[in-house]
Image (cartoon, rainbow, N blue to C red; front, side, top):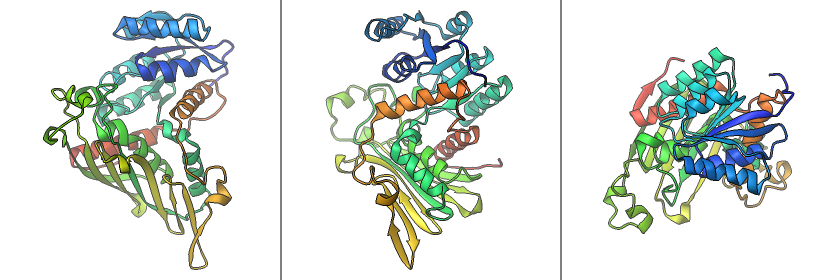
Length: 359
């Protein structure tokens, strides 16, 4: 992609917390882009986001819209960032790609694998970049683990365990309503660690997935006020397990939980290989030497060897800037179409109970 002679014109669809704090602020901090337009079905939210950019950041005030189709038609956008929930994400993405814009979309990619495949085909037809924001890849510890594996630190990867244990339910948005979010503890939360596992394993060919998901929410004898307030509309899963088989004997297990005891709250990925082991939480990099494991964490990642504190603002900003740099031709996308497809296929297979793939 050729470098632009003017700042990239970016339109943002969805002006909730993520759209404002991640997309709008990230674009405003990039020297090669400007927020040209904001869209939200609640016009007041788009107007509030526009005021934040102009009054607090001194950026040009963007145009505001309630209808993303009108925004795309009127604004001659180079980039569209889709911060909506999953239910409308494919439609916005297809409209933007059809108009010649590059698209950065939040996760999960779509409510279904067929929707994700349609998005990928549309990007290929349009010759435009589509990237799903799996922003955990932009964590320092994740980058170190990926490099360790790619450089042969654990030999050939054989098995990964991706786990996501959330003590709460994300009530800041209706992620607990499956028709809007695309899914609960799996699609809304654990998809981040699924993506990391697929990345760490080298995105081998997916053969089959099986799994099970259920909701314990209705059976809780009592609930805190914020969860009692969503009781009537809560229909997402909060307890998920799955198992994926890849080519060359590679496998992946998945755990996605909401409402876990706070003592085990956290997310991680563990990878076993022919000659070693790596884990994300805590960060451990081990290579088999002289009949035992040698801990190389301090050697390879001296600044990260202690407890790692994930800063979502840092990784989110890196994600936005990386995508804009890709559009400007300065770097190659960190997330590939095949990886995006595989992430969505793993989620689909777990929800279905069992799926086999011929990819």
